[in-house]
Every structure is written in C-alpha cells, then in structure tokens.
Image (tube, rainbow, N blue to C red; front, top):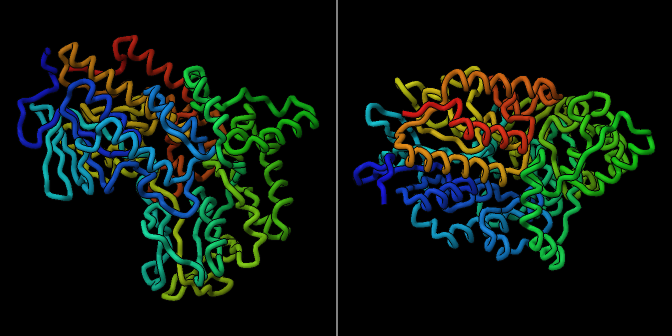
Length: 540
C-alpha cells in the first residue's frame, strides 16, 4: 500500500488525525478515517459517546427532528437494523443509538473519554497540531478536526448572586444522571427556549409547585408526538434510498419537507386552510411551509398571529396567554420550539408564570429569587439558559494557528470561515458544522454527514496528490463570509436577538452565523468547489 503523505513515523501519542468530540459528527468522522487506513484518535470530554445527547438529560429532552430522518444514512444495514419507538426520539433512545453505532463499527477503542482539550497549536516547519489536555497528556497530529458541536457550551444567566442560592441548582445542559425527586419541591425555571419548553411540562407534573421565570416568550409548535407503528417504520425503511435522496434536495435536509406556498397571494380562506394543515403536521413543518414568511414582514405576521391565536385558545387565563405570545421578534427568527403540552401546562393549578420584563430579577438569595414584584422561595432552581452557540467550544479552547494567532482573537469581531469548514492561517484544521454552514438551520444529522464526507474525501485527495497541508485562502474566506452575511440580510433572521447572532452572550460580536440558503444550495456549492480543483483552498 502506498504510504499516505499525512503519515509520520510512528511515535508515542503521534497520530495522523485527531478528532475532538465523540458526538454523531465525531463518530462518523472516525469511521470514515478508519476506512482510509489512517491512525485516528478521538478525544471526548464526556464519559461516553453521544455529544449533546450525552450531556442533555433533562426531563423531556427530545429531538425536534423526526427520528427516522434524524439518523445516519451512510449504511443501509444500519438503517434497517435500528428501530425508533417514537416519531420524535427521546434523549435516552438517541444516546442508545449512538452507543449502538459505536459498538457496531468498533469505534470505542479509538476514543479517549473524560478528557478536555486545553490547547491546540499549529507548529511549523513540521506542519503538525500539538494538542494538550487537562489530563496533562500531549498529542501530535497532522490534521485536527473539530467535531465539538454547535450547542455544547452551556451559558449561565447573567444574574447577580446566582452563587448564593443554597437550594438545588441545575442546568439543563449538564443534568445529573441519577433520578431526582421534585415531589415536595417548589421548582423555579429560568428560560423559555427549547430546553425549558420541553422540560416545563414534565417538571410541572413532578413537582409540588413550579414557577417559570420568562425573559422572552418563544414560538412553539406542537410535535404531535406518538409511537411509531411497525407499518410506519417498514414503509419508511422500504423507501429509504428514495427518501434520503429527497432530503439532499431540500432546504432543510429533511425528507419530510414538503413544498411550501406563499401566504400573501393566497385568499384568507386558502391561508387559514394551509396554516391549519401545517399546524396539524406539527414542528418545523409549520415553519418551512410558507416560503415568504422568512422574507416578508406581512407574510410573517400572518404566520405569527395564527400561532398566537392558538396560544389564546389553549391557555385559560387571557392575561397569561398574552404574556406567552411572542411579539419582540418575527416568527421563526429564533430557534423554533417543538413541544408536547407546553401551553396546556399553564392551566395547571401548581404552575405560575412570572414575566421578568414586567418584574425584573433584583437578586438571587440563599432562599430563591427576588423580583421587583415579590420574593419566591425555591427548593430547586433550573437554569434553562441555553448555550454559547456555534463558536463557544472553539474559542473556549486555546486554538492557535500560524504565528501563534489565536482563533478567539480572529473571531473577536465575528466568526469568519470558508464554507464553515476552515479558517485562513489555521492549516489542516477542519470544522464540522462550523459557522458559515447551514448546520443548525437544517437536519443536523444530514448536515454533519455532508461535512464528514467532504472532509474525508479531501484528506483522501491530499494523499493521492501528495499534499501535506491545506488551508483556506484569505480571499476565499472573506468572500464566503460576505456572501453568508448578505444572504442573511435578505431575510428577517437578523431582526431577532437570538443565539444565531450571539445576542445571548454579553460581549459576543453580533454576526449571523448559519448559512440561510439551505442544505441543497450549500452542498451544491461545496461540490462545485471540489470540481474546480478545491477552489479557494491552498495546498502545500
């Protein structure tokens, strides 16, 4: 066998490729690189595979993409073997799926667990990444691939005195593994994003009393979740090749996506019928159902008001219903929530909604939370306050490129990449679902497969061509980042203070990070780049 140019003489802790993260992206990346006969090591902070589905164990944790679509497509026998019990999979089932995949493809022996990267530094002239861990172990690799996830760095609320609280303090993104008893507790929840919307109905059932501290109401669409029958499972699996191909030719990367319609040209009766149809389909089917709602404020308000009216009909107390109606951002410009019984929860006698815009938090005490309205004594405080999204994990590590330039310094004014895959001056450093790619705006499973396959094909090409180094050119990075920004500016997305633009992290540059033109358009651009001889990349 011809020796791969990326390979160095075997030395202790020297690898051809190091992958950071053993979530779904890292597992598939490892599988592909093993097939290239490269020496690969995966470094994972958790104690097992699964990534976000290892850490996020909060009550009600569930994927918001349908399970038959949110699954690997690269292996036909794997698709046929695994059986999803529900339309939308719960966290334990998704974690078991990740473990099943890791065992099935013999990936566990190539993963180091309970280890965090504290520094990754590119060195010349050996063209190597030198990686240091919190365990005091140092590794060297020709290529470093960041599979760190878009939502992997939890963010705590900026509330003075949070450390004073003497009750049980929990974060949805780092939930304990053991079962917790809330039956005698007054539980408080800060936040009303996806994690809160999923956990609040469960916590309301489990606790003596629940107080939700809402900073900003979010739009949520029912999942209409339920068990998947054997007939539904078989019908999908029989058509998987067709369905997967369909997914690759959609905006969302989801084979459930149907063609949308424009709301504005339709008659009131046609609009009402279409809105109700999409509502009954549930989840993101509603958001992707109306092609002009993402660009036109009038169309968007039609879609938004339909949801608000559903909230008003569901919540018995009119005042509480109005507090739950979002009005500070266009529909869909923040991550849409997909729920089971969320709005109905506010009809329970043991649930209270506190509007922090009307009565802001003044302090957190040892006993609970004090607002301008009153003091709430709490036994448990749950922080459902989200993540430092998309860039958090990358800037948290001390990643240094040529001339010791730090990635966090490069991104101080906003994330900039070429195709969401690489950054100029950081050779042989790939990112999976990085800023500048569709990532969180589409089916993440298909998005990561596309990136993993592109990266592994690129590494294989380098071996065949005798290249040792690849990096993005500065001009290509600037042009792509400008394109990403211009595309976002044509939509309503930038009008929301969302984690898409980093608005939830004080001091973070306000730049819209995902690529808004969708999976199909993006993957075609990536294919075109390869066809043009990896246009925009520089090899050495």
